[in-house]
Image (cartoon, rainbow, N blue to C red; front, side, top):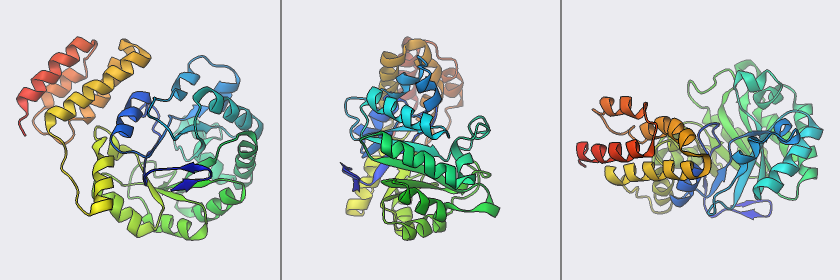
Length: 323
């Protein structure tokens, strides 16, 4: 699959998720078959104002190429300058513009999904970023603002005309947030309306969903978000299903827990133990999503403070669960 001058060795990508898809998690997903990963979204204003914490979100793992850095904002000049900084700081291969985030604190500033209500401004933003960087620019957006203003087909045509090299469509409106069912029919309509690659996004929770969404929409690739939480194997299993028609089983529970521990180790090396352990409370619980009868362990996970506690808990979990 080709995005401008960038070649992807596969059709599955890890969607950017704020507070979730940090460098450690992205590295694990790449090791398990994700062909493209995208950083957590970063504010171009924060980059332009030289915020010290923001550039850390752009750090890529050694195995993370090709990779995209996702930026958000709504002022064309700031977005252009921020895109240059994001490209320089990360060494990314693609700049992705977030025009789909539904979070109130983002939308209320005119960013994210708010740009779907102002396609003319969105076009200016895309054009400014395309002219500012020497890598392909992609755009991620939603079905529309709400069911009374579904405009993703026209928005997709606008993005292509403005210079976007590929687009990702989440089949929900901003009003839906992450509830209800994703509309795969509208993603198919978008694919039929443009000539650039289209990533389908929404309601991909297991490997079989990747085959279904590709067949239903005709999309070029799939962007997997929440389905990958605690399950980086969704990529390699889905790749096998797409290529051979056979889906391998999940690895043994012990291997899954070892992977969870390794993810937190990678995070601690990058962010420090304190922050990594706070975030581990969510990540490790996600790795238990296919198991039952572990409520007591989940309570203890939410109290993790040190790596030693995690190591001990992991061994207890392995003893408690037999495949």
